[in-house]
Amino acid sequence: MILGDSNATAALQPPKRSVTVDDIFRRVAVKNPQQLALIDAPNRSAFTDGAPLRLTYAQADRIVCALAGRLRDMGIPTDGIIGIQLPNIVENALAILAVLRAGMIAAPLPLLWRRADAIAALARVGAKALITCRQVGAFNHCQLAMRVASEVFSIRYVCAFGENLPDGVVPLGDLLTESPGEPLPPLERERLNNASAHLALITFDTGENGIVPVARNHLEMLAGGLSVTLESKLAQGARILSTIAPASFAGVSLTLMPWLLSAGTLSLHHPFDPQHLAQQQATDGCRTLVLPGPVALLLAESGAFARDGVRTIIGAWRAPERLATSAAWREPAAVLVDVPIFGEAGFLAARRMPDGRAAPLPLGPAAEPHGNSRGPLAAEAVRTAAGTLALRGPMVPRYAFPPGIERSGLPHFKIDRFGLVDTGYTCRVDPEAKALVVTVPPAGLVSIGGYRLPLHELREAVERIDAGATLAALPDPLTGQRLVGNAERRDMVAAALTAVGVNPLVAAAFRQRSEPPPAAESAT
Image 1 (cartoon, rainbow, N blue to C red):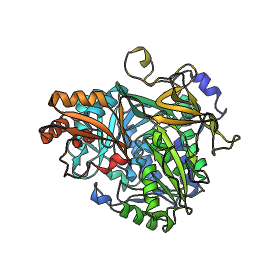
Image 2: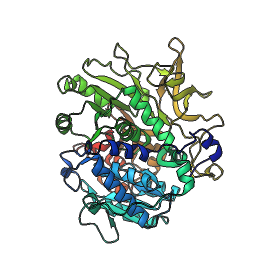
Image 3: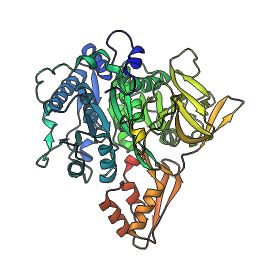
Image 4: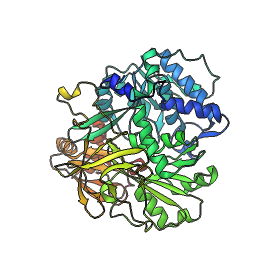
């Protein structure tokens, strides 16, 4: 599926078959078949089924081919949309690559999304299948997926990794060990001739009016990954340890794409356990870490990077308004690359300045590496007449999805006639530095780690349960914001919110003060 004018898009491509994400993966697998590709956290069995996996590129390529074959055997058509909800484990990366190899479109879902959000997102895009696992912690994801499928008419299959799966779920775990199957039949000629312009990824943003699908083709995925790879100056064969799951455009761009573009090794950490993180880094020999920016600064203060051989930190800032006033980077042994993320519109990446302060956001075109005007364009930042930051460029989508949604009255990804996407973040211009400074997040939204929630909808849901209950958003040094709820019967409100199927971060706002904080996934 190509959005917009396919002829105009094709005119921008090389005359020969253009490169896709799967092409890059195949080439690395052919060149380095015995190199380690993907590594699970050693404590995997503590949060989900299965022993930790350590796969070479040859093994990963075989599994990707087998998974893609099973999807094609199910009769799912080319360009069918496949939802994926998995923790930060090897199967997550394999599933995304398999969907792309099958000629389909990957739609990763955040791990803490429950029934309400998953149904809203997958129904909007007409997903054909949902890939998940049996459980994460005490939560049964298979049960959730089957309930979602029963309410989303377009979903024909629920597929899952793990043991003791319920009836009706298509098992995928056998493909992790079986010998390779038959070669995949070729895709349509039109797809082959203009492969990189086809849609590859759908992620989901949240606006004041609800969930918004955001679609990108292979070229836009590659642009995002190239921006991070160049700014981080990753060497070929880089060993990367990531705490961030590929459940958003930024998540994919900071993890999967640098891994593939550097032909490296990707170790995955299910957040967040500092002891296990240090163990993984030492055991797997990772010199590059992908962390939330505030967590990176906190670990640096403890001296963690001075003794463990880390050389590059890629810091994700889900609350970019906090970057300009963040603490200076004082760790000489490692370089910090800040990545302020503006929802699903895009991001900007820049190394810390020599004095340790965050580099100013560019006003106008931003090339990579930062400050190199001759480098490839990453994005262009503009201050709108409303005083907000807008983005356009190679990583920013040019069309809303699904096609024609602009005429439906439904919430959609808004792109103006100049290709600009208003991120909603208020900013000011620093005339001396000729830069932008983000000051205020989008109105009406709560941002908790990687999750954006419409505050008025949450308050309405709480009021329907208990008219006397209140819900407020407060600043948080690590996650950007946090929710705090108050009610006469907190436990009753929390249980009712869970039953409705809202994000557990909302229900956790009403937990008793003595209870532990919500799941650590929220921090990333």
